[in-house]
Image (cartoon, rainbow, N blue to C red; front, side):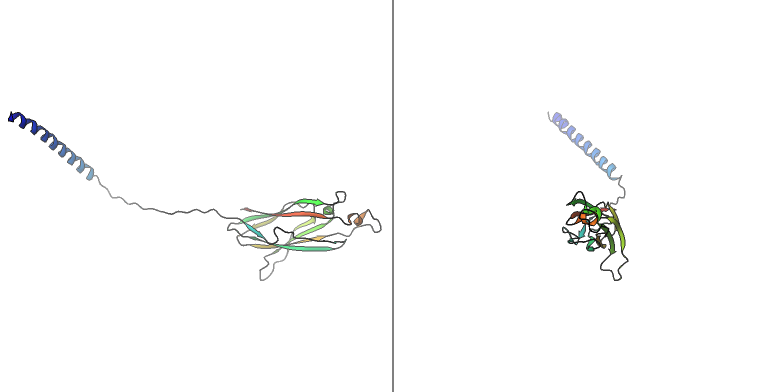
Length: 194
């Protein structure tokens, strides 16, 4: 009986020994396949979108507030615009909401308007004015103002003139047809990233 037990105890030991030898051989095979390695990282990468915005020295008020204009008279107003963003922008001026008090004799179709770019008001030597629009007040379309860098400032001068071209003595023709009339208009400034 002891002989049977010895054989039975001996077999598991041989099996465990064989498994141990195989495991050791496998580990050595894996360890012997080592090679050089190197790694680096670039952490904390940040991408920020640019900002395009502008300031308007007269917003939301009027550039022109003229009353009592008579034939031959002119009046003007100025406004400063600055690209306050950090992106370059393409600027445009347009008009909207033209409302004439007299639809039969629209004052907006009679008045002349000149819009001039006076450049940067803080410049040591002011540049020569550049006319951006010259025509009737009412039908002015979109006016291209150019591409501005960040922090670029321009002053614009708006001059409105009541041209003298009436027929004296007639209460309903010529300039007399516009007596007491008024016109209101909105000016809109737009900047688009370039």
